[in-house]
Image 1: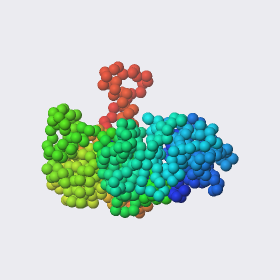
Image 2: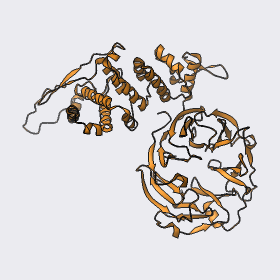
Image 3: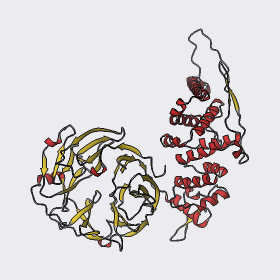
Image 4: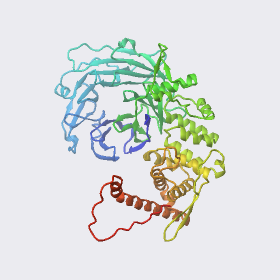
Amino acid sequence: MASSLHNTSFLCSDFHVRNLLGVSVDENEHILITCKGVVKLYNVLDRRQVRSWSTKSWHPFTSGAVTVPTTNNLAVVINGNSISQWSREEDDIDNVKRYNFEAPIHQLLVSADKVYTVFTNGEIEELQSAISTRRESKQGFLQEDETITYVQIIESTNTALIATKKREQASCTKLYELQLNQSGGRSPRGYDLAVANCTLTGLCALSSSILITLWSNGDMYSFDLRNDSLEKLPGKKHATETSVIPSKITKILELSPSHIALVGMGKGDEGGLIVLRDLSFAMTVCSRKLKMYHDPPLAWVTPDGIVVAEGGSLALIPYTVKESNLATVFGTKASEDYEYTSEVCRSWNLGTEEAVPEEAQETIYTNKSTELTHIIRELRKDTLTESLLVTHLVNILLEQKKTRLLNETLDAFRDIPEACLVDIANYYLSCSDADFEGLCKCPPMETKCVIPGDEPEEVTCPFGKAKAHFVNGLLRKPFTDILLSPELYRLGFDCALSLIQYLHFILAAGEAELVPEEASRVPSVAQASSWLSLLLDTKYQHLVMTSQVDIHRLLLSCFTQVNNLRIFLEGLMDVEPLVKRVVEAKVLPPQMNSSSYSLERLTIT
């Protein structure tokens, strides 16, 4: 599966966005949602609140609550100068002891199995150590007019990175690198983080000690904190971001060592946008629109996905990240540049020939017709994932009504997004039988069948042979139920009804095979049943509320046919042990009673 952002799902909405302070990871698919007056423990999988703890309005929370790994208690900053810790069984946290500090507190950070207290003067200290020395003066190293805008702990080097701005010089950012757990050391030196005629709009320190920065002109810079001196900030140019408006504040989130997500303002409207980027190849993988843009963006990474403020609610966007294959990318680029597929690839530096993996020998132009290849060449291939390329290609072919090329696209590409499958289905089902005639050579197919029973029922295929051949190519493509189901709501009811009729026919006529051959375009029984089930589920209300008798008869016949298939398959399973003994030439068990067996002939129509 390629790297991608999946469908947005609703989490909760019983809060005001302006009061939202943070979201942190708890244990066992739970998260902590902190607002100014309440901390909520939320179950992500069940989409429900487990419990909550509130505080008086005159003692508001001022930083996101965190879980203390060693005790499993919760900790939060109150009024900016005190810390409260309580167990999950506690009901009234106003009665819990609070630890007051002389120095104001910026926030609490969790790193590995420790919780760190970040003070507004730049001092960072472990929570328990800070509590025991809370009466002592903490000097810090920041000036009074410096405000912390970003802080991140890098576990691999046991360092903290702090970015600050001065109140009167909002465009000037200083960066400090602080070694943790060192007492009596020198105050860290601040280094200017600047690009000529630009403003810093986003930064993120990755776990790999790479600092990614985004600037108002769209340039993204990469800086190696381990090997480079901070005097060389901001580092080398990494890429140019074109999806979000770079002049607006953008939040950068680390999803994996090779992928980041940018949460910012989308172009063309005032809505938000999440962009998934591959760092290894400096390219955009995919993006997903948000209803609103918040300044600053409100987004956090959890094991279950990205939690983001979506309008006046919190939403969860699951994601999949997969390290890119250099061979595949290089093979595709080589074909684009030189317009041929080579058995070897040439080294950029030495000019030597090196054998490459088999997948690099196939490019996006392999096994395509001349007409389809020409259309692919005209596409903007900013991204190299097959699913994104297919999305653009399908949209163009639908606009141009290239029915034959749509069929070729379904055959040629393996990764067809579920949204594209529904778009093609809408187009196919809205076309007449005549629109498919003569486009390709179609295999023979029965157009009528009789369902045996007390009252034999004749079923006719709702499509011509050519149209059925094209629809079969669509039904054969692999899909994921959870991704296809929401897309099917876009399928018109008339189109859905005709597809239900066709699925009923191929199941009743035996056209759908249990295990189709690789070269066959006929869908399997499992594929046909899954499509039928999802269509009945998404169009359930319309189907039930209709007054048309023909539709009711169709649904009853579908139920009867599927039930007969189930009974037949269960019967085959019962016969399996006997057949296995015959195949293995084993002696049959002795007959234990006088009753005789009768061998009947079973005819499948």
